[in-house]
Length: 323
Image 1 (cartoon, rainbow, N blue to C red):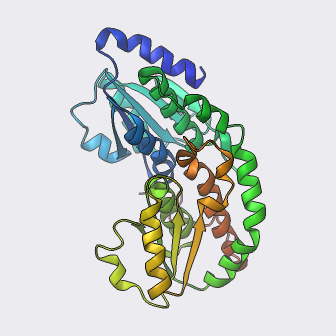
Image 2 (image 1 turned 45 degrees about the vertical axis):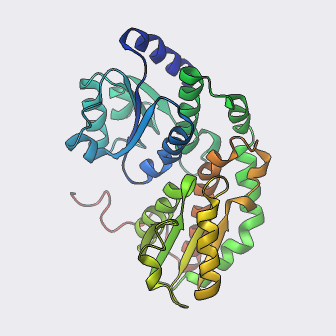
Image 3 (image 1 turned 90 degrees about the vertical axis):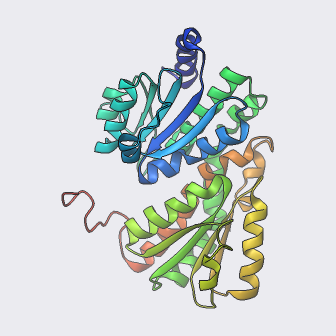
């Protein structure tokens, strides 16, 4: 079933039980970060639908009492992370409508979800069909079908532009990405900051691309929280990466940048405003920040990886030992 059909089917089944009350987003690691923008969209735009986001294992062990047949659970795992599969099973048992997002049609995720969305992944990933883009599409569809979201058409038109925006940004930002790689190839620790639609993206860069794929220490900080303790560690040497968003929370990032210009030197800014997002209608472009910026921040780390001679596929423990 297509995403539009999935939500229509759920809506029809929910009419007899009182309608939709909450949407939960559940995943681990990079998958959770990828679906975070959909949660942000729901929080910003939904009028009468609650939302929440959970780590898969926390969802299993500290399940919200409100999970029932008036909830949609969007649960994501590329292959079939064990705790995420358990989250699907638990949500099913509670009567929720589970939408299993996964990278392949034959995974345990696909086998257990009441509905399945297979997303593009791998080296030849189509970004307009990646997990972050399709999670957003689910959220837009929920908003439109349950609450008549006014900017639905503009959101759907954006999908035809995403791939060319990412390709163009990679081309225009290649010199900056190579300079990033040269500058930081020998650094051992990084602070990565973002806010609003790029909160999950900052997590991805810190925890997935720097820590997991390059075995570098990294701290993810929300731009709004930087001034509530962490900024005391700022000096001229500390490597800081600021992901600047467009939209409602940009002021938070601009405040950080102003401070960095005064008290720091070893920082890099990757600005969503420089990516071509302005090609998307301003009523919805904010929500596509992550769909563009996750491929781009990974592109920056990839340049560093190539200069270091360390593959993004190298791991110490993941998939190698029991954990």
